[in-house]
Image 1 (cartoon, helix red, strand yellow):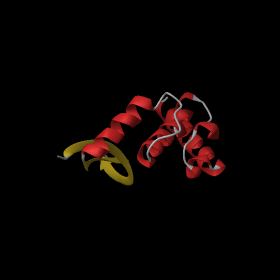
Image 2: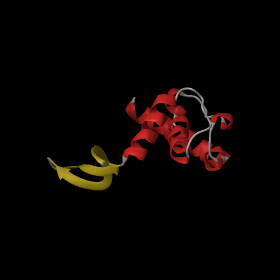
Image 3: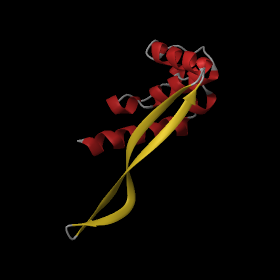
Image 4: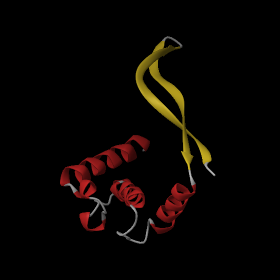
Length: 111
């Protein structure tokens, strides 16, 4: 049996619209639907349950989830350490540096 999830996200686009005579960013609401089977659900549960434990050994899907979370540690001003990343791609210095910069930029945009 598969389960369907509806994920909504608000996205600021580069497009500008006129509002009261001023140009402002256009806000669009986008819906993303994902269908997940029991195996996928089990993997998602494993990823959520173990994301803070420092685990490195799991299925490829779980490893990618853990890497995504750990690469976003810049949100709390922590540079990701490749020792705690699972995949070769995530361990690449350019990937780590880029992820850290994006996380810090996001934090600054919220303050």
